[in-house]
Length: 165
Image 1 (tube, rainbow, N blue to C red):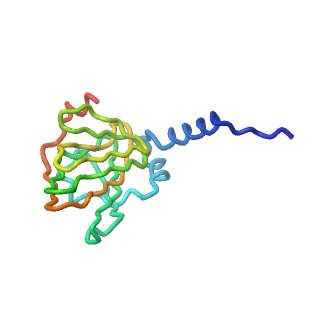
Image 2: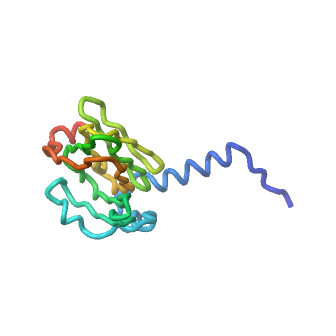
Image 3: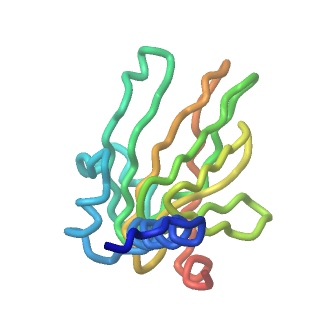
């Protein structure tokens, strides 16, 4: 019997296949099987700051000093421009877990996000993030501790601006 030989190319091919599985998905049923933290509940508390449907599953108790949540965006959903203000420290980290999305800082080109992407957003930077038009998307959002932290919600990302992506 001939034994299979595993090479770096084999591992790379397997990894690429796994990445493809975790990337773009328009099917909610398929997406749910890969979304290890779960979709969560409809994000009604913050719905006015989103275009489209979003879902929230808290992963920590903010009273512990660290706020972490899995945020899921339906295809085309994005949050408004916003700023995580802080006198010291603060900001936000996004750890992308499944699907495809966008992150954009004011004045910079949008960045494509896929499973495994990590975005560190300094305090006081105007930005937005959300799903691509044709893919469900989830990321873990971690609020970085700091002093005098608060979020300022700004204007929505216009359909015209989003449709150019």
